Length: 112
Image (cartoon, rainbow, N blue to C red):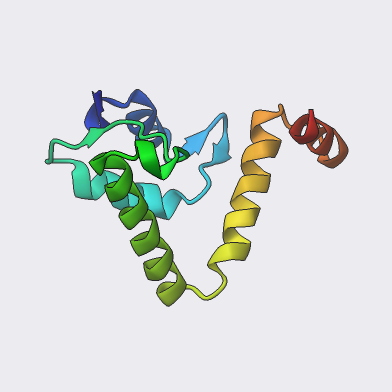
């Protein structure tokens, strides 16, 4: 378990004017908002595997499902184009993660 305030990348982004490798952080305004809100809080962040059969679901899994549903409702109320923006974010992430090799190389990387 780690604390969000200990995540070096969040501090590095802030120090680098919300850029990574000279490029703007995707959804920088959202990360700035998160950073401002948790600056003086102790926030525990840990992974919960959301893809488990209901027979193995713990209270954490149920909480995770409720949080996911609430987030979808909130985002849909705020921005009717949230799904398209989510797809754009995934495409940006795939491009960044695959090494900025262009559209065709990113497509091949995603399918390998």
